[in-house]
Image (cartoon, rainbow, N blue to C red; front, side):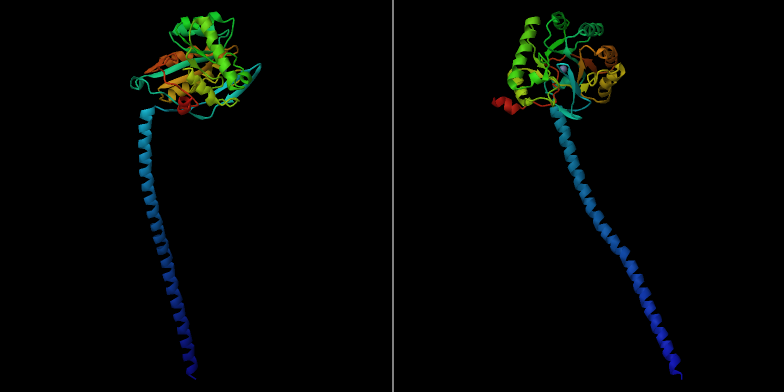
Length: 330
Ligand code: ZN
């Protein structure tokens, strides 16, 4: 009779033992999992740490290379709202330039170039009914600017006044008609010789600087722009784009305040050594004329900054860089 309870007790002990083993093994497994995870995490962190170290070293190397390159080539990065209205026999198309455009600056006179920043005010598409007022304002403030002009018989006095008053007279094509000018390279070269000889006849000046209608980065050109650039190189003509746009041709009416802000913001917020400001000398651009005295006064109030006309000593600002090798081979 006693065998039955003992059997029961044995059975219970076995169950308790099984339960104990289960608890103990569960406890060990639960202890083991976090440890394994910890070890895995440690290995991963060590790997990442090594990667961070390598990347930091590479970054240091890149930063060093960039600073050396910046010192040597004085490359400015243009970030602005570059755009120019294109007038083609009645219709106005707006070409918006890329947000980020590289601009090249040559290194002539690099040493004294560092000490003072230069602003070149440039007026495209003139002469016009506004030219005399613009010239009056420039004279009032003792400022010299650059006029990228088209061929406009009837404005001989204004071309001459630009030259007589010490501004830079520069070319912006004779016709400014995109379909004709950029139809092929022959049309481009023919137009170039037309504006060059026309300005020579009117003023006796052999112009040395050119601005492509729409800029060198325009997207409406049928001709390969590099061919046009190579041609200008052969003629010893330097082309200038801009790295500050007044935005006065982005639409029919742009307020005076907007034009002032468009010009002053890049100048006040970037320490470049050359600012080439795009504005227009054209009928309908009266707010540009109104903005001009405000812009000049604010620029003249800034330290270490001068307003200068484009000359050989001003570093070029170009959206599309000339292909030196091609130019040399030709
Ligand atoms: Zn133009």
